Length: 380
Ligand code: GDP
Ligand code: MN
Image 1 (cartoon, rainbow, N blue to C red):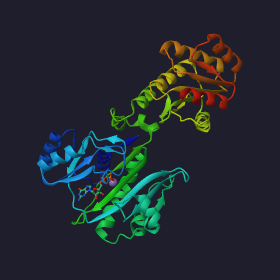
Image 2: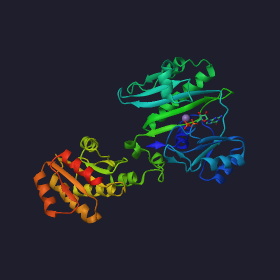
Image 3: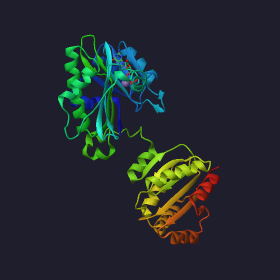
Image 4: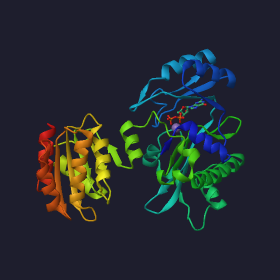
């Protein structure tokens, strides 16, 4: 789960990382009130789950409460990479002398957390990695050894930070960010920019924060951060039903059992000249209720013109799946064409059950490619 900047900063603050004082606002009037409370110059920042807000006009300085209200009007409703701005974070403006970059990601290849630090912050980190790779210091932390103070020294000296006060402050932040990363079960914590003010004070001006979904049960307070409004309603319904579902932008609904088969199903639909509307994995069990739940989610998407239901029965029994399909047809009053390919355990029985039901919108095909071709035709 990705957190908004203000939520990530709230966690940073809990772990001792310095951030600016700020308030949340949903309307221009609230932005004005926030600016009045904070006093002086403020920054008005779009709270959307995407990067590059600054470039897109979603981060603006405001001189006074009047100006904050005006800037809020400009930014609210803005579409930033497909995310419409509904919330603003108003914070005390900082003077910036230098912009650094600090992050921890989980490096799956190395199976270790990976620190990245550079004094070339403020810009996209990919740009630094490409144009100035020597400026980017990378360092893994061994999980058994744990975090040691030398990690911070290696990063700070490696990146060429020379000022002793900066070295000390940044080292502290590096240790705090590591604790924050581990204790929040994060997959990513990023500070870009980590600024130095003209007075030599170091603080986090931005936050990017991703928490491992599978660990959210341990963090009820973080789980509450989820934007009910911002999430795709179909993905929210899927989560509620325990269905693995990813929305795509085509017209052929995809349902498979197992992530591997579901991905192959997406591929074979593309090979057949179609465009998948989603990825949906029934999982290994595939009981009738699971089928009903998955079909309910998929058919809520108006872009779905046909459904390709691809099952390979191992543990999953094809007759059980067939019964689930019929149950879903009846309970959900489905009219969208459903193309079914059943293979593996009890496939014969499954096909027989479907044939006997003789539903007008049900098509049974013998192979994956035949089924994909048919589903693509029906979606056209
Ligand atoms: P992003 O574009 O989504 O990464 O949003 P950031 O929070 O990083 O803000 C973008 C840029 O706005 C930063 O790199 C800063 O240059 C600028 N900015 C943000 N906050 C302040 C501030 O308090 N004072 C000043 N002078 N600039 C700021
Ligand atoms: Mn940033």
